[in-house]
Length: 140
View (cartoon, rainbow, N blue to C red):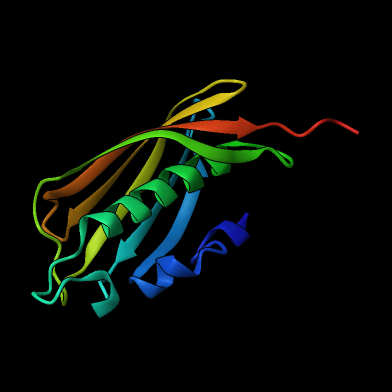
């Protein structure tokens, strides 16, 4: 599963300053992932604030990675069906943030996730919920 950490094959995650560091499965077989975000100039507007779309990219990836942590074999998320994102505080160039994604519910075809960006002081910066299509591999 280590292939899903770092940028997990999504170069944009590292380019904007994100890194996924740890993952696991809780007692209910629901996945999670954690990481850090130190915004790069590419992630920010000319005033040094992270763009809303950058939050969405990170939050979407966090939920996908958490779902993939819970899936076994060749099962993987296939597509984001729906996603809502809220920005509550600005994320700024020169600051660092904590990332977390979690699976809320996992069914045969659909997964539900939550993700958040937190300041180093633990204040909620942005959050998201999403619904994802799950691709289940056919047994050999």
